[in-house]
Image 1 (cartoon, one colour):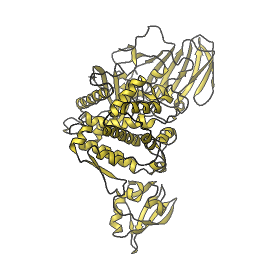
Image 2: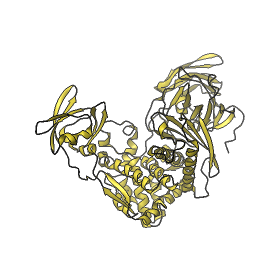
Image 3: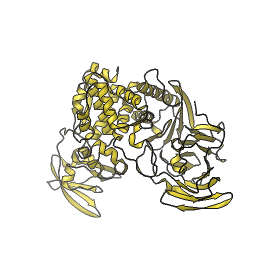
Image 4: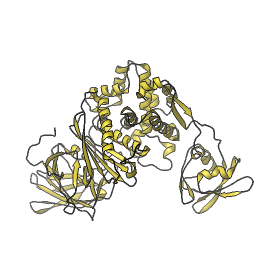
Length: 592
């Protein structure tokens, strides 16, 4: 059941007016019932779940304060903090505007077709009152009587469309409940007896809502069973999926009893479509990922993030577990729910493995270091990122895979049981790596320090082939694509080949290619020169030659680079997976 709240006004109250649709402005009125004499306020610089300082205060404008009808002086203390010099214990009102131009899951958006916001973008934090109840009232834009509102926050007084007042137990809960507004599609279902709501904005007329509801319900039930057993219930009383369908986009952000998602419109299931494509499988994986986070990172979270500091970076070395293991299970849950077959699941897993193998940075940075460096590296990628870093999502998923398969091979437990034991040990609360290691030892009967030290804190290769083979899956080396063999990542458009990344140790680096180069042409030893409009034209013009001259444009100069073409043999950075023992594979993946 929703929280029971007294009818009295909360100590902190926000009034959100989204009526300035064309101006793209939210107008906010914040009332503090009993402020301090020098009341400090701040707007978060980041949103939990997205580990980058995004400076939300850049969108705040026209901040002013008054008390008893009289202006109150405001002093700005830094980029995101203010102090109101007011009379204590008398209601203080602040008014301000927030520009809403970011159509992502992280901040705020407003236009005549749709509104969306996270509290971290709109709601100033009242220092000293963070642990008290907060009310938020959202008005319906007069110009859009057809709009509805959806959120995971607890309703206090709302109309049939969802507009009105909501109450949160504290500031953390307030900013953990994103709000979606618009003339959206909506449906409800139950998983383990708990109500779930699925909201989709921006869908095309061909959208098959019934198919999406059916598949997401199966994912939810499978996830709840993983954490709590077949008769278990989730740690929330209701859950809301907020999906925004756009022309091109993908992503999600988790919350305690909701998630905000974005996808490409073409990836939604379509009416009359017998078998949706890979884009729909990817979308279902996104649903599974963010739903899994309701347990793993929103409740069970890094000990360092037990209390969020909204004014600075919050460091942890455990994102390999919280994001990586979630990434392992999001794909595996598709298989367990019967939404993909063995072959499809192995294709998804192959993509993850190849992504890691084709990242030279895996030999430079451990996945624990990648977790800690998320604030300055993962979310700030550049041309050198693949050479210096590894993804705690993808390599973390492979660590989860290796741990699960190693546990299963020894026969005493598996990763599902370890996660359930961790949940019970912590009460679904903060987790340290030491606690994880202790639970692993208790469940399996031995110390896993050698594996975790190597896989998590080292930069060596993971024993993927050995562990997969023990579970009926053969890992076979394959010839890499041309760009990978060259050590390049390129962008092709309008007859131009531009270098985006030069991978460490590859033929392109040895030849002197640089990110930003435009590859114009090649010259063969016989003296023929050929304009290069697509990378796959290279073998056509090179013929049997191994040594070429590449013409590139760099800073308006044309340079000639000596390039030695690698052969097409398997190099170990590209693999494929296939079932070699159906019975052994079924023990891990389930019946085919």
